[in-house]
Every structure is written in C-alpha cells, then in structure tokens.
Length: 461
Image (cartoon, rainbow, N blue to C red; front, side):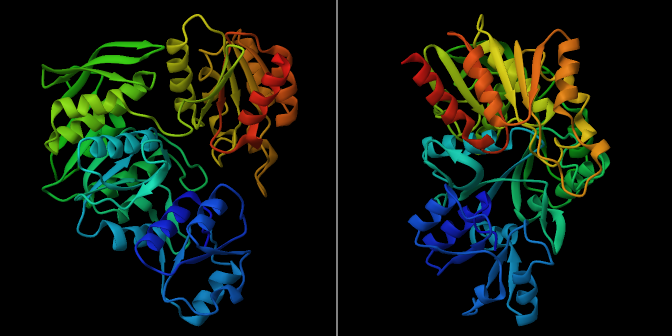
C-alpha cells in the first residue's frame, strides 16, 4: 500500500526479484515509479479500496503515507491479514544475516549511502543497498547484492501509522554513520530535543562489536554518540578527530583534499562532487571502508571515479554556456552548503538560485528567518510561493515574498513568484551565457529543469 513511493517501489522490486508475487496500490500512480513497476511486471491498482485486497495476499506492506482512516487499511484490519511496515519488511527479508551499514543524519544521507555502496562495489564487494536516490553506478536506487554487506539510508522519519518510531530502528545497524543532527521534519517532531531522542534510541540498539562513525563538527552529534555502547570513530574538519581533512580545494574539476588519520596522512583524495560537505561525506565513507579492511588505493580510486547520485548537484544540461543544476537541498543548512559549494566550483560565474519550499517543514514559518542567510552565495534568487499546508493557520506559513524582501535588504537580488511558469518566463529574460542555475527542491518542481533547457535551446536557435 503506497507502492509508488520511492522506498516502497524499490522494496516491491526487491521482493519481486527475490521470487515473490507482488502487487500494489496507490492514489498517485505516475511516472517514473509507475513505469519502473510496470517493467517489473508488478500490477498497480489506482486508488485505495477494500476490493484491492481480493484475492487476499499473504502479507501487506503498509507505506508511511497510509493513514489509519484509509479505507484499504481499515479493510486490512477487518480481514485480519498480516501486515508490516516498509522498514520491518526490509529488515526481515534483506538485512537478516547481513552486515548492515546504516547512514543516518539530517543531511547527506543519500549522497553518503550512494557513495558507500558504489565504493564497496568498485572494491569488489558489491553490496545490497536501498537508498533515497538513483545511484548512477547501478542505474537504480536498490540492489540485492551478493556480498555480506547491505547499505541502507537510515531515515529518522516515522515508520507507519501503527509505529511512530523512526525507520532506522528497524535496520539492525552494525556500523552507523551519523552525518549531522539538526531540527527538521516539523510535521512530526516538536523540537530538536525530539530529534535527539530518536538518535539516542538508535544508540541503544548498536551492538557492542559494532561501530559509530560520527561527524564531530556537530556538538549535538558528539552529545548523542557519547551514549553509544560500541566504539566511536570521529571525523570532521577539526584535526582532533580520528579522521580529518586538510588542504581542501574546491575547483571546477572536483574537490581535492588530504585525508589524515590519527595525525598521519592517509592519502590525498579527490571527490568529483563539489564542496566541503561532500568532502566530509567522502571522509565518513573512507572511515567505514578502512574499518572493513578495504585497500587504500581501491578506496581513493573509487572516490575519484564516483559517478554521483541523481538530484545531488546534478548537471542536467548546458545550453549556450548556461549550466542548469538540479539539487535536493531544502533545509536551510543544506541550501547554504550547496550554494557555497557551487560558488566555489564555478568561480567567476553568476550563481542563480531557484528555490521551491515544498517539504512540510519548509512550508512553515519555522525556518523563515534561517533561510535569509542561506542564500548569501547567490547573485540572484527566485523563490516560488509554496502550496499552503491544509488546515494550517495562515500566519504560521512560510512566505516567499517575505524571504525575497529580506534577501533584497541583504543586497541580494531576489524575487518571489506565484508559480513555476512565471519563474520560467523571468529566467528566459534574465539568464546570460556563463550563468549557473541551481534549482533547489525535494520534488519535481513541475519539471522546471527540462522546460528551462528547452526554452534556452529554443532561444539559442
């Protein structure tokens, strides 16, 4: 139920590949997930209704978008059919008997888990994995794998309507990376303390022979991992960490840095992905792979040839020397780090940021002031007005118009727009050769990337 979600669709594909008969239902049946499921010969029923459970399945996996008032969920309970959540199913069918490598944190989970899976593969240990983005080296976001390792992106979001605990509690971590801990997901967490409580619960399930790889640049991370019953390997920019970075240099060709392990040079490294934050993601992966015993040259070679992950600083196209980049950034910190990295990588180019507040957190007023300093590296900012949250007070909603006004007062040229069409019209009249356009959203943004490239190509013709 909810089969067209990214994680749910991937799980359906994994179960199908494992030999099970799989079907699904969803009210949002559209590409690309619908096309993917069709290619797997997985039947999809459009809409939720009791008849979807006929003939009765042996097990139902319930996605976390399903509410207990859902008619299909109510029929499920009435009929007494066994059911589990997506994290429970992943743990039972695919993590049991594996060395589970779980990547957690507010930021960088998808990039770091994709990097970890790719470097294991290039090092001769092709893992199973399930992550939140398309891993370019595999062309998909999951793999069954034939090695002892399984890489999983560990989300702190709640599991299902019948299980409000974080998903990562079901992932049986042997090694866990903690990249960062900040307040997010305001729709389910009241404050930072509630987030910290979730990560504290993660610490309690770590095995004593396991390991935490933690970014010590965050005092909150340091506080939480101090409770771990297993060894903790620290990493960060601070030279006092077990693993640290020196001589960082962000260029158009990639990010270059020296990796230092306990005061000694481990190796010079290059990451194709720009920015300090991506160097730190790479550093976390290096620490894990070194602990697993992979060869140093295999690690650094794999990092330098990493193909990337879709929607993470992904160049969608270049037309008339105008570069269009797609990125998932939506939290104020992620927006700031992404734009900083792009400004460093494209020195001397005008950086145009196009932002869609789309998450349940970014559409609330809670981050209104935080976003003001997130766009300091942009030369020009366009912000789409978000769709209002249903049944939510208007005075507690995020205002793109207010953000544009605050940015203008900060001497950053900014405008807000009611919709995507108006943004495209303005981009068409504004963009110049050499510009870099960073489109930031955790959603499809009305296919703005493809439409913009088409407009630029037509304009050039």
